[in-house]
Length: 98
Image (cartoon, rainbow, N blue to C red):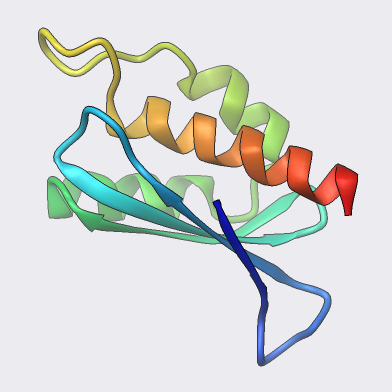
C-alpha cells in the first residue's frame, strides 16, 4: 500500500491500494484519523463505485470494514466493497504503526 501526505492538508493521509480479483484496479483512500474523507476507484462499475464512495464519505473506518468485509461479486470470492474493506484495514494498521 502506497501512503502519502495530502498536499492540501498535511494531517490527512492518502492511501493507494492495488485491488485483487475485481474489475477495479486500485482504490485511493483519504483518511482524516479514523474518518474517511474520500474514496476513489480506478476502473470497475463507475456508477456503483461512485455511489459507494459517496456513502462511505464521513463514516468511521471500522464501521465500513464491518459492513463491507466478505461481500462477494457473483462467483468471485471478493468484490469492490470487500476490497475497500481490505484497503481500509491496511490503512488503519499503517496509521496505527506510524
